Amino acid sequence: VEADDLALVSRARAGETEAFRTLVVRFQRKVYAVALGIVKDPDLAWDVAQEAFVRVHERLSTFEGKSAFSTWLFRVTTHVAIDVVRRERPSRREAVEDVREADVAEAGEGILSTSLGNDPGENALRRELAAEIERALGTLSPEHRTILVLREVEGLSYEELSERLEIPKGTVMSRLFHARKRMQAALREYAGLAGVGAEGAVGAEGRARAGEAEDGAEDGGA
Amino acid sequence: MKDCVRYAPMIGSREGELAPGEVRGLVEHLAGCPACRARAADLAATEGLVAEALLARAAARDFAPFVDQVMARIAPRAGVLGWLRAHRRAAAAMLAPALAAAALIVYVSTGGERAQVASLELSAEGEATTVIQTADGPIVLLAPEGSS
Image (tube, rainbow over all chains, first blue to last red; front, side, top):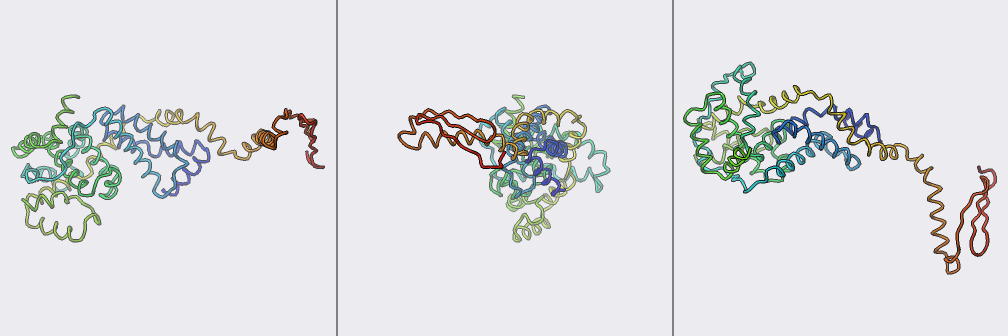
C-alpha cells in the first residue's frame, strides 16, 4: 500500500491531479477523524482536514519520501488542528505535566474493566461508552485531546509523540497518563459507574491542577 | 504510592518504548500493586475506544463533496504549475525565443561603450534570417543552411 502511496505522490508531483484526488479519497476519513478529535467541532474538523490536504499539495515538491506519505499528511493535519485550537482558545497558563501522589490516589480504577468484562468487543457497555467518547473528549484540555488522539487514532509511539508535539518523552508519558485518567473518569461518569472514588478524583483534580483550571475555563467559555 | 508516581505513567506503553530497566521495574511494581493492576486493566478494557468512536463518526459522515472541495482549492495552482511541470519541454520551447531575445539585448547593452547607445530593433525576415538594427547599422544573422 505504501509503495502505491509513493507512486501516487510522484504522479501528483508531475501534475496529475487525478493521482492527488486518489490520495485525498484514500485518507480523507482518517484525517478528518484526527482533526475531529483535536478540534471537537465537526465543521471545523472538515475545514482542518481540507486545509491539511491543500497544504500538503502545495508542498508536494518538498516531500522527500523519507517517511510515509501518511505520516507527513497526519503531521500537517496535527499542526493545522493545533493552530486552530490555539487561535480559538489560547492557553492562559501552562498545564501541570508531572505526576504527583494525589494523581495516583485511588479514584475508581478497575470499575470500567470489571463492568466491561473479559470480552469487551461484544459488550453493550462498550458500545455505550464508544457513543460517549466525543463528549468525554470534549471535557479534556486541547493538549490532552491531542495526545490521546495521536496515540490512539494515529498510533504514534512515545518517540513519535515526542517529536510531533516537541515535548520530552517523560512529558509524553505523564501527559498521556493525565489524559487517560480524565477520559476514564468521564466515561465512568457517563456510564453511571462514577462511584465515590471517581467523583472525588475529578473534584480533587479540579482544585489541585492548573490544567484542570484550563479545562474549567473551556467549559465556561463554550 | 511513591512507586505508583513513577510507574503508573508507564502503564499502556508498547513494546520497545521503555528501557529494559523500566520494564523490569514496572512488572515488579504491578505484581505488588493492586491499584496499578486496576489501572492497567481499565486501560486494556477501553483500549481502542477513542479510535473506534472517531473513525465511526468519520465513516458516518457524507464525504461525497470533500474531495471536490479540496480539488477546487488546488485547481488553479494545479492548472498552471502542474501543466508546466508535466510539459517541461513544451514550456521550454515556448519560452526559448523570448529568453534568446532577452539574452541578446543584455549582450548588446553591456557589450561596450558604443554598443550601449545602440538602439536595438529585432525583426525576423522569413524563417531563416534575423536583422538587428543598431546605431552602427544593421546586423544580419543568417541561419545555418538546412535549418527551418
